[in-house]
Image 1 (cartoon, one colour):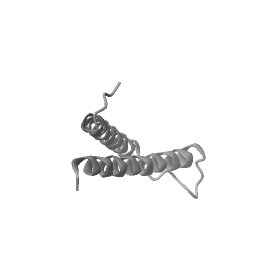
Image 2: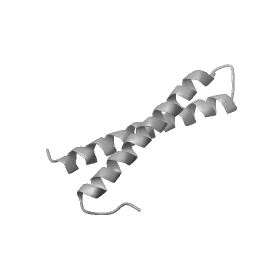
Image 3: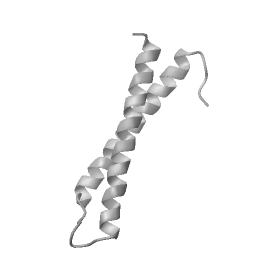
Length: 78
């Protein structure tokens, strides 16, 4: 596997995980704002913060890999 393909796969995987975590946070927020006795929020504030931190770390990694991919392909990132 070439380095460019590896970077592409890494970026794609990170973005899929970020999307999934965003859905979890949005769903949890809906439970909080529409609080009923039947469907309480599944995550507390500490767990939400952990997911936010994970998204931040994954997005930083994806950004660095995207810059490396652009450099590898001969472009110059803005």
